[in-house]
Amino acid sequence: MVLAIDGLQPDVGHEVLWVIREVLSGEILIAKPLLSSSQEDLAALLTEAKNALPAVALSGIVSDGQLSIRAAVATTFADLPHQLCHFHYLREAAKPIYEADRHGKKELKKQVRGIRAIERGLEKETGEEAQVTRDCCLAVRSALTDDGRPPLEASGLKLHDRLTKISASIHRVAEKRGFPSSLSAYSVC
Image (cartoon, rainbow, N blue to C red; front, side):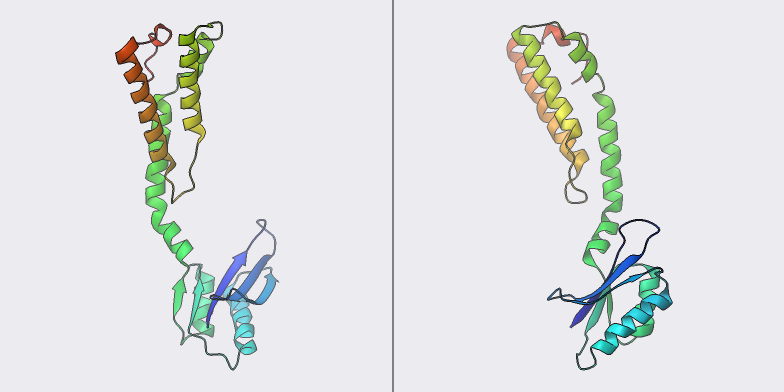
């Protein structure tokens, strides 16, 4: 049996609900609110779990990397392997990639800042060209607000891909029909 210890904190400054569960089944062994997440309080909670399972062979502990948890596990279960939670481990490993992607997205947004000015310039226009231009602006605006879920979906790369496709579409139309006069004053793409 492998135990996991998790702290669930609804609001900063309030009690933390500490949950000790069996990893494979997900069965909760102990759930207790604590005002402190000190090593001593967590060690007492882990000792309670250990005493509740005297006949069960434990093979390991899984937790996040919080120092007080690590110290409490080391004192209570010194003979058991202690592994960091995969979610927390991968989240920390992905931080540099996430930060680079976020910076790239910010830089891409700077390059397409003229969308609202184009839309304002087309407010009184009614022709097909104006509608197509408004649709392109809407596509860019949609691309700017479409975020992924880091770290698995890089929203900066997603934005780059979508803007590249919009730009390619505009350039294909420009090659066939010429560049729309309503966009001639702007250099969006």
